[in-house]
Image 1 (cartoon, rainbow, N blue to C red):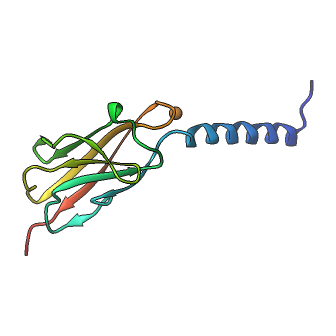
Image 2 (image 1 turned 180 degrees about the vertical axis):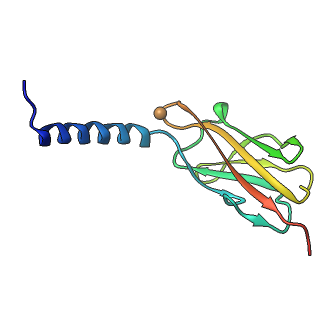
Image 3 (image 1 turned 90 degrees about the horizontal axis):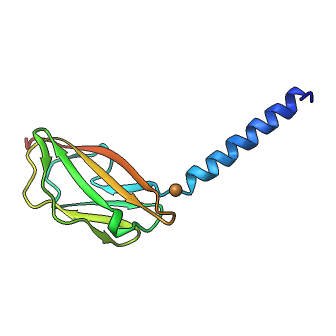
Length: 123
Ligand SMILES: [Cu+2]
């Protein structure tokens, strides 16, 4: 069989589109509080991460890493509008922090991600 170049290009495009549709069916990060790369002047008293689908509680976890390692958080719970929430029990010192999330949406596939924010020293 002999494919003309445009046939091959069209086939490649269709395969790429099919892959993109499959990927977009997974749950994904939507926004957060603190926002990604935010520079805060005060410690947040909780973390909240919103997703594109309702998080499955049994597969969901928020964790926080600071300049000196992991920081204990309150229990991860499901919040409003497809979000996860966890309390920050003790005020965070100035520095850079990474929020790590793990969750799954409609199809049960576990997704992971992380984002950073920082707290600036008071002036
Ligand atoms: Cu999936």
